[in-house]
Every structure is written in structure tokens, then in C-alpha cells.
Length: 163
Image (cartoon, rainbow, N blue to C red; front, side):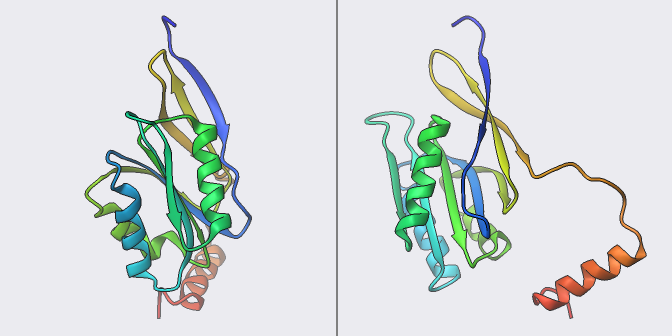
């Protein structure tokens, strides 16, 4: 293959769940992400998976919920990209765990943290595939007005992020 090919892949995860999609570089990613998540929000429901880029090139996984773990595994098998991880969260918002995820030594970057529909832009070559970017949700329709600002502030108060 002389020129890379571009592919658009839709991630599948249940409505009401959030995901974190990122890049990391070492087999210990699974253990360290598990510890970061379970230590930050005890009792959290999550599944995570990491795809190796060398050796046996397996999808490694763990989590507190077998269904969420399976969802992360299936998405990584569909992406076919090495050194990628996906976390699927239920009842937990990414904002609650994102800083801890980013401090895991193996984590190189976060592509998205969202509950929105996600499409992943993947480049493919003879060597394999790599994530080039993501399409997270839909485009904006307008600029917020005073009523929208009030609604945003009220939501933040309701979920405990503003007094």
C-alpha cells in the first residue's frame, strides 16, 4: 500500500454511558488504569481494554462490570489500532476520573471523553492502523444567550459543580 487509507469507524456503547478513548504505550496500562479508576471512585462500574502493538498483539482488559469490559474489547477489535485504550463508564462522569487517567505513566494522549456518539478517523498502512482524530457529537447550532447561560449554571449547581 503506497498511500495510507482513511477509515471512519463508529464506536458502539450504551446510551447513558461515557467513554474515554486514548493512546498508551505499555502492557501495564490495564492494571494502572484499573487502579486509577477504582481508587478515584470506589464502587464505580467500568470496563476497560488496551490493544497491544507488538508481541502477541492482544486486546487486554479488566473492569468492575463484564458487559462494559466486553464493549471496550469489541470496540478496540473494530478499530484495529495498536496502543489504544478505551474505558466505558456507567454512573461515572469522565470529569470525575480524567485527571487520574491522564497521570497514569503509560497514557500518551486522550482523544475524547464523552457520552456523545463518536466516530474515529483511522489511518491505515501496511504496518497497521492509527487514530488520527475523533468526531465527538454534533456541530453547534448557535451561540448561547442569557437564558442558555442561566440553564447551564443551574445544571452545574444541580450536579454539584457550582454553588
